[in-house]
Amino acid sequence: MSSRDVTKADVVRMLVVGAVASAAGIAIGLSINWFPTAASTQAGPIDTFFDIMIFISVPVFVLVTTIVLFAVIRFRVRPGEEDLDGPPVHGNTRVEIVWTAIPAIVLTLLCVYAATVLSDIDSAKADQLKITAYAQQFAWSYQYTGTDGKKFLTNQMFVPCSPTTANQGEGAPCDGRQLSLDIKAVDVIHSFWIPEMRMKQDAVPGITTHTKINPNRIGTYPVVCAELCGVGHSAMRSTIHVVTPAQYTAWLKLNSKAKTG
Ligand SMILES: [Cu+2]
Image (cartoon, rainbow, N blue to C red):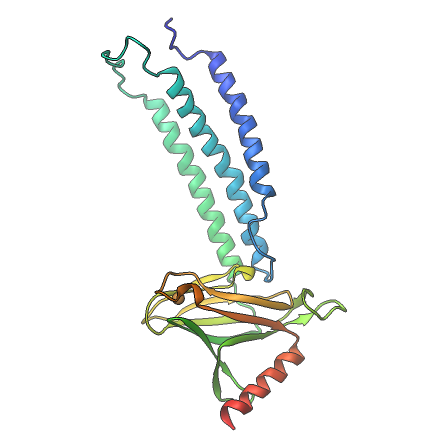
């Protein structure tokens, strides 16, 4: 037995170190508040999905790092060995099958889970508010249908949401119409993103893309461009106002009049 053989004690030590590091990494990963305030029903399943990704990816990272560090230390070149060849290794079929099969199974399960979450959060509700969002360097505009049936453009989004508690102000939980967005790009590729509502969709010249959002918190949130689109990209922002149905109707009336009368 040479000083470089891997013993059972080595494996046990690596497992202990790996388990402790994984537990610490998962605890840190889950304790960090990665996302802003959740303001849509889509936020819950998406945030849970990220937590599960942390739970799975931290142990994988720890496993790989532990084995690499062990190999670097155990099999390093020692004084007098500079001109020696390493031992001839011809692979290990069993290990190669295992390290191919396990990631394949994990990735397949994650794909199925992600597809399930996506189809769940993207399912259509009966009561939709249809808006067309136009992206251009470096601004957003939104096309609404006014109270008179005519279309008008605005650079701020307003959406109605009925508060479900006595509190009607900022932060009140609410329930209401699903936004059904058609997204168009006038010039280059942009990306429509409301971080508080989590949903993001590319805006691509020549095609119309779609997304659905169910706001569930009264308040004002930024709409940002999430695709580097030119020098003014970082300034390509607008606002979505989630307001009570009465406030929304008042805003819609005002704009219908202003744009057509
Ligand atoms: Cu942009």
